[in-house]
Image 1: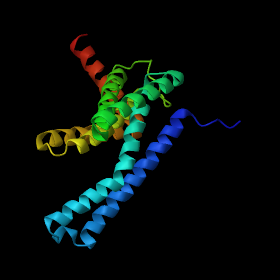
Image 2 (image 1 turned 135 degrees about the vertical axis):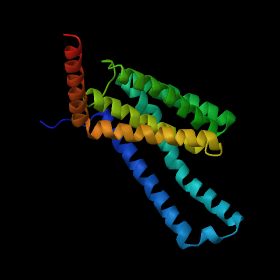
Image 3 (image 1 turned 45 degrees about the vertical axis):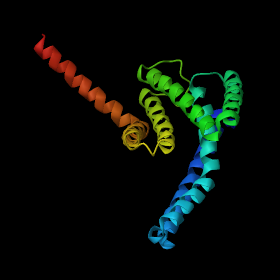
Image 4 (image 1 turned 120 degrees about the vertical axis):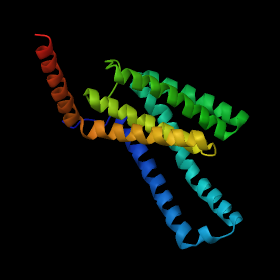
Length: 211
């Protein structure tokens, strides 16, 4: 009997698709920048090119931020509660966007996602059984939480790139969380075995020192 794709599956599929499109746009923009010799053009042309590329990629970044705003709380809430939360969140973000501009609305959504993901990461570290994950295993859950945290911080870095110090801090935190997250997700079994081996040696040393 075929299993019906879950809510989680569709969110992952949508996120993957948007990230793929963003990657394609970034690669195209990078190569076109060199091929069209824009890097040798006057500053005004460079600024116009950057603004044009930003306008192209903006809808996909908006979609990604909205997906993150829905994807993160699904670890904490049931599906019915998640749907209500998502509707309420979009209403609040839409209201803030109308009053203060789209950038402020998206920044608010991003900060809410960051707050919730911090809670998810804390619960994952402590091994809470109340988190809702498709996959089981402590290291896979921790790795997934770290990757999501890195993705949120990466987008936040795009908002705050003009602040050099904050940009550098966010860049290195993003890099660290993503690398650790992917390591824990893709190599969860070796990590578990390595820690078990280390723990076994530690216990053996304690027995020798304290017979």
